Image 1 (tube, rainbow, N blue to C red):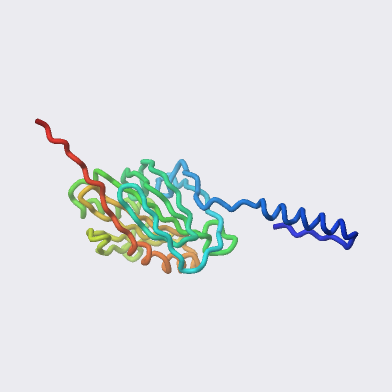
Image 2: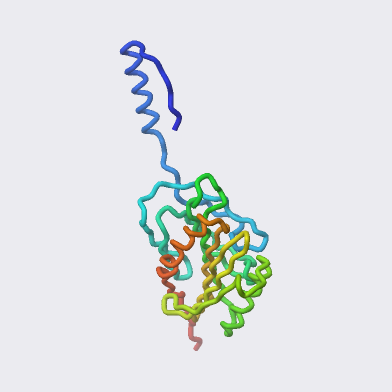
Length: 230
């Protein structure tokens, strides 16, 4: 907001200026909290994505629950921005999936437009039946994409997401830190990709948020209705 300097004048001038100030203050419209859909998602292999969102003022520790297509519900901090996509493409983990939605945190470092966290939610409706092979192939693809070639820089874990077996892939380079969670369900593979620039303050914010977010994930895959034939 601009600050205007003015000097004492007549009583009538003061009244007019106050009236104008009130009028303009009342006409200020709130910023839309939703990012317009982008033509590319953060996970596509060409590296393009939506611009960093502007920071907003939201009470600390406030979370909102987001209901997404394909039966996904997830809670994120209220000051994160949501982007609905529903667009297919080849991801940085080497598979063509549909990007359901993306979420963007405020900048972790003031005035640093590259210090925000990206959460990409994808679904692969034809992952095959071998979860271990799928995950191993994804790990190799991530290593090639980010030039992460040593076991010291890449770690994997087994966990449960909404009652479904999941594999977590953690990796870190000089440029980026990522945690990708692959969840196998009866109706497809769900991938939750968290990524941030490898800067100490941004990484700390990443670590402060990621566990609570992935623990909040609920998946209810839509069932396929088969019409019987007579």
